[in-house]
Image (cartoon, rainbow, N blue to C red; front, top):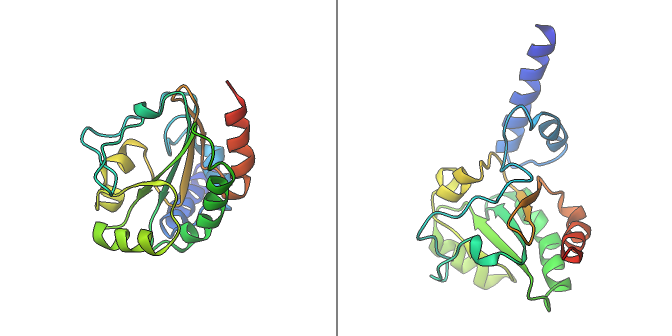
Length: 184
């Protein structure tokens, strides 16, 4: 019973810290328990499809299946999330390093509640990736399909549309993207 109590305490601490926008060191505890408590999409399974009618903030239809054959980085973030903003440097660096590749895509899923404000933010800063924002935050359809409990959250999807990594550490991003791109 004592071990169960400690286990519940760890999960509660992860949830509390996660919702505050933290990803590490809690991610180590989350990773330890993710087989018992599903957090994020299941690694090794097909990536969940975006809901029908999903559009980018520029109005273009978008789906995960349209990227089959390519490597995709899903970035769940928000402009109000300080740790998310800190990760932007790593994501921008990976995009700049791979700008010439036609087989690597970053899709930002923004949890902001105001698409107009998001548009102003993106126009004001270099945001090279495609952005999706349904203005529903943690209640958004994509967020629910991917079981996102905290942000920032980075998910890597391989060329076959299979989730390969969940809870990717931004500092390791370049190396992990390069490894997936090397696979044929």
